[in-house]
Length: 81
Image (cartoon, rainbow, N blue to C red; front, top):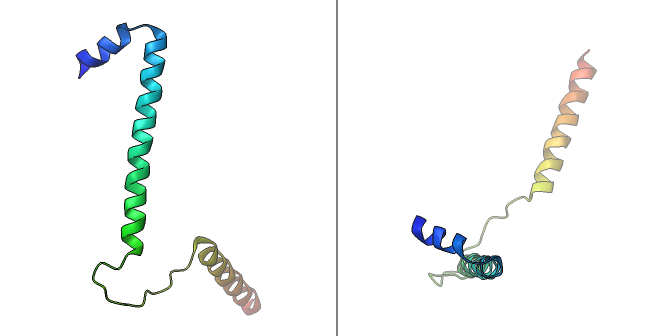
C-alpha cells in the first residue's frame, strides 16, 4: 500500500489531481449507495407484517419539552421561596 502511494506521489501533478478527483467521486458513490440501501431497507417491511411504529420525538420537540420542563420547575422553585 505504501509503495502504491509512493508511486502516485511520483507522478505529475495533473495526474495526481485526476486520481484525487476520481478517488473522491468513487468514495462518495460508495457512501451514497450504502446510504440509499440503508434508507430503503429501513422503510421496507422485510417480514411483510404491518406493525405500527412508535412515534419518536424529533430533536426540536425534545428540546422544547426539556426547556418547558425546566421553566416549570424553575417557576415552582421560585414560588416556594
